[in-house]
Image (cartoon, rainbow, N blue to C red; front, top):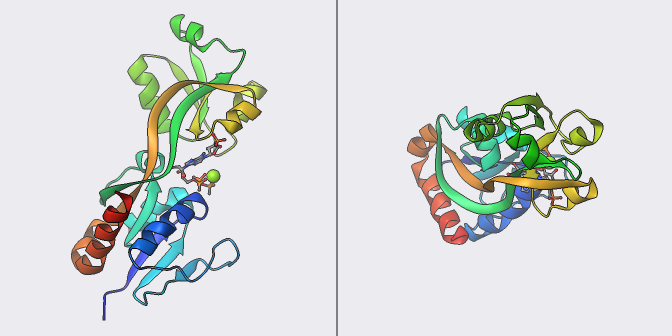
Length: 214
Ligand code: PRT
Ligand code: MG
């Protein structure tokens, strides 16, 4: 019998975009998370199961062995930290970028030039802090957990740091992207201890994902 392995995925784009990679590894998930309320999903491989967790909880599950491997965005990994995690592959899925955005009528370049202190609202405080420190721009960071787009519209902040994919959300809220901080995609993350103890099934998964993601 093959050693059982548990994969942590988040519902939505990561789950959807990981499915083809799983399929390439011969793994079919037997339930649809959009219609089932189950948090543990069986697959056609009796030794492989999928657990559904919040996107930002994937590194925590894998780090502490609640899952042997998982898929997480570069944004989540930077904010959370990668201690105890092995990151063998950039899967090139759930692509987007981390950007600075402001109201259409806010002169960001002038504010930066004048050395103004900027109020920046974001869920990604680590990425934002490092970005503005590198630029030598003084900022007051305001931590939010969602709907960052609202912050400049209500006067809570001058700017936001958020993920942008099509740009539709920014446009709909009359915001403009003024700086691209980094490109984002999702990575396969593996528990380092599990990699030793469950080497065979995890290596097989990594190899199949590598082939399919190439
Ligand atoms: O939703 P929840 O609070 O549970 O967690 P989450 O938002 O972290 O999860 P999820 O599933 O939305 O995102 C998981 C991962 O997908 C993120 O960690 C990113 O690495 C990646 N990803 C790729 C994105 C996007 N594209 C994306 N567009 N994550 C979020 N967005 C949001 C963005 O925050 C903004 O609100 O979509 C909006 C912008 O999209 P556009 O197309 O209008 O520009
Ligand atoms: Mg989301």
